[in-house]
Structures are given as C-alpha cells and as structure tokens.
Amino acid sequence: MSEKQSRRKFLERAVVVAGGTALVSTLGESSGQAARKSPNEKLNIACIGVHNQGAFNLGNVTSENIVALCDIDENLLGPVAAKFPGAKKYSDYRKMLDQPGLDAVVVATPDHSHAIPTMWALRRGLDVYCEKPLAHTVWEIRQMRNLAAEKKAVTQMGTQIHAGNNYRRVVEIVKSGMLGKVTRVLIWNNAPTRPGKRVAAASPPANVDYDLWIGPAPMRPYDPSHFHYNWRYWWDFGGGVMADMACHYMDLPFWALDLRYPTSVVAKGEKTYQGDNNVPDNMQADFQFPARGPQPAVHLTWYHGTWRPEGIEKYQKSSAVLFEGERGRLLADYSSNKLYMEPGQGSEIPSPSILNSIGHHKEWIEACKTRGSTTCNFDYSGALAEAVLLGNVSYRLDSKQLDWDPESLRCPNAPEAGTYLKPEYRKGWSLEG
Image (cartoon, rainbow, N blue to C red; front, side, top):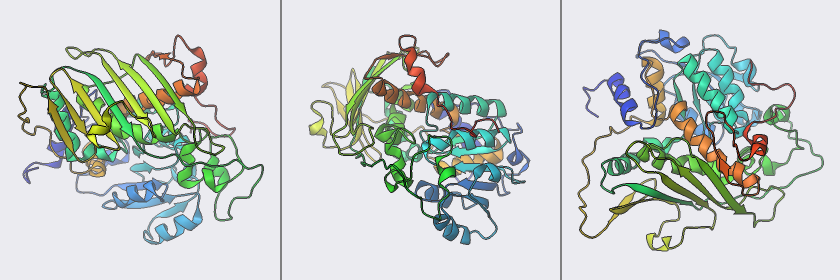
C-alpha cells in the first residue's frame, strides 16, 4: 500500500472488497469512547484471556494502551500483568467492563464465554475484537451481530488468515470469473481431536477461579482434560474441530463466492478415540447455498479428521479448499494456490485488485479510531460462524438434515434443533448486564 494512502482510505476501500454484506463505513458516527479519539491517539484496551490465543491477540494490540487484563488463572495473569504495570488485573470480566475510560475489548475466552463479555462490552459502547467462532451457539451470534449493528460498534472476528495475501489472490481469481460458474466447494482439514475424561469430583488448583471459568456452562468437576486449550473438545465449552477450524477455511469460499446463509445442512461423523468427550474426530458436513444474483447455487462439503473427499490424494494437501468451476479448479490453503484449468481455457491470472491488509488486528485498531469498518466485522463473520455451528447441530441430531430459516433462527423440519441453537445458561449468568 502506498505511503501516501491514508489509513482511513484503506479502511474505506477494505469495506468494498470484504465481500458479503460488510457493514458500510460509519466514519463520523459516534460509538463509545473511541469515537472521541483522533487517529493519532491510543486506544484504552482491555483484554479478556491472556494465554494461548489471548497472548497472541495481546501481542498484536500493544501499540495501544493496555489498561486492563483479565484471566481466571493467576499463574498466567501475574507474569503477563507484570509487563503492563499500568493495567488493572481482574479475574471477573464483568467487573472489568465497568472500569472507566475503556475504548475497546479483546475477547479470547473459551467459546462458551464469548457472548456474555461481548454483549456487555457492546452495551457499554465499546468496540470488540472476539475470537472465532464468535460464540458457542447460533442464537448468541445473532444477538451479538444485532447489538453491534445497533451500537455502530467496530468489530472484528479473530480469523487472522483472512488478512493474508494468499487469500486475497484466491478471491481475485474466483471473482474474476476465470473458473466460470462455481457450483462445488470441497474443504478438508486434518486437525486432531484430543480425548479427555470426566471425573466424579476434583478440586481445581488454588490459582484458578474455576467457578468463573465455567461461567454460563453446566458445572462440571475440574479436570485438566477439559481445561485451557482442551475445552474445545467438549460440547459444554466448545464445538470440536469444526468450530475450531471451519471459520478459517470456510471463510475463503464465503468471501470469494459471496455466500451467506445455507438453505440446508446435514452432517455425519464418528468418534474413534478413547475418551469421555463425544465430539467427532471424523466428520463430513454438507451445506447447500442458494443462487446469489447471477451466481449459481453452491454445494459446499467440509471434512475433518481422516475423512476426505474421494480422489484428493493427487493434490498432496493435508488441509485445503478446492473450488470447482465449469472452466477449471482452484486449490488453496493458507499460503498457496494452484489452478487446474480445463483444456482450451485461459490461465492468465488477474492483476491484484484487493489491497493487502495492514494486519488483522491493525485493521480493527485503525477502524476503532476512524469509525470505519473491518473485513471480518460481526455481520460478515457472524453469518459464516452461524453456518459453521449449524453443522454441529445436525451432527448432534443424529445427522438429520436441517432446513434453515435464517430470519426466524429455526429449522422448520426439525424443531428439536432449538435445543442446540440457543443455550440455557447456568443461574447467575446472562447476556443482560
């Protein structure tokens, strides 16, 4: 990007190339503390979760003022807080969000605890960066999307690969029409599942506020096999490999093909590992997306574990996205792409037209200051995350096909899906606050 191009101009243009239904720029609108800051002032940022992905996010926002840090594990929080002596320490994010002077919040908790701090932050006029898959259930995601739009908040979901140059080049190829009409997308991912165990009774370590970690989820006796990173392999707290990885890989066809809501979803899978948790380590989910203007309907299939599409061994990729068009195919992963054109079809790559990102976190930071938008705002990324989580709902309903009505958030042919579409929070926890 030219040095003469302002950060504001970048973000205005980023809205155009983000695809889907990215929120229009709200330059000049007021939303929370950040609206009163000039582009050269630093934001006052609070971070919820300081370990693993939380540490990664924190490291990417240190250009700003880190004024509050929250984690339920004092052994993790202490050393991190020592690096930010001006930041207040908290174990309870509900108390942290009432700290005066906050501009924005980074949410890097387990999935089951994404929605509550995000909704509380939005109600306080704060901008939010939240990790994928945005929330634990479809209903929570929709509440977050609606409130973010109402508050004109600057939001970003933590799908950092979206900012990679390779994804932009893939989107340019698909949108150029080079492949012709794309009706089929295959995605496969080899991420493993970690087995865990249930225990009848146990005491968490003294440095951990376990009740706060459980938060709105059902209370379960503490065990390391569902704590910290391992929470994602339990339905109580996460959504298995699909919730973990599909937002990254499905992001590419959502962006390139302007996908939004599926009309139907059906998923099947199996558990082959030894463990008390029951998320599938092998899974296939089929999504049917309707035609979008001149673009035809799309059948997208997700695979993870050892399950794979037939014949993909020739591509020699352990995880990848394959676009199949009438003129050719395009194989892509995080860092590479390769065309397989039909005989007689051209192979000239379109010139770059989508600006390279200034960085996924920087996009959000700059948009907070200029009141612009981001490429993975909650409207775009929320629709993506909702589709991803519907795959898990179908699997949990014994692989029943779900006909999806995105307006009512219901499956007309499967009212029982409501059990998994909206959570029942533990007493004392609510989105209201």
